[in-house]
Length: 262
Image 1 (cartoon, rainbow, N blue to C red):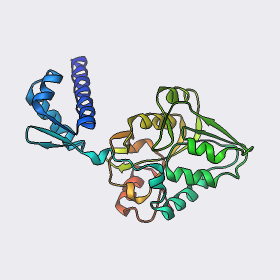
Image 2 (cartoon, rainbow, N blue to C red):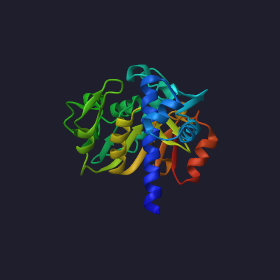
Image 3 (cartoon, helix red, strand yellow):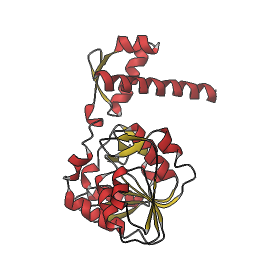
């Protein structure tokens, strides 16, 4: 019986993914088309659309659904670089205080992480694991810092290396800390990003780290992007700025998560 329930759930997850992928390419879809393509009844399709609408992936319309494009919006690295600069610099400064000589740390992509990278150039015997080309560029030529760069395909928007090669290159690589940024921070939906491929690499960095640190300015709270990196309970420390709502910070503290205000 349990196996049957599991198979049904897997089928529903596969349907959700098909619907989302189709909407990403076509923006709109109708119930009859999905019923035919997925080989299920229109009643089942409507239930699927209701579920995806509750999760903010789409907006139902008469006879079908429209993509919620806000989930997939992702400004480029250069566009984000000029946003909330004071907050990001403060967050990076606080994060740098956690990094000491001799550590092995992981740095993912993001403009706040980029500021952090520039703040730790004076460390000695530091090992940095990263999938971010900009991180490597910032640390090149520093003899006291050893850099391990994953392989993979480049995402031009974020300078991130992604894909199976990036993920596999992290097998057996363990770190003291991982520092990463996100696009959405929700108590219910977790930490999210518009890119499924990038999320998978960041998740691997998180799995292999003893201590997980999220760098998130106030604009990220209460937002949900397309793909979950990890749920809230898999992080240890959140570094944010003074504009983040107090009630959100209290919820984190109640879960035993350390909160540092820059």
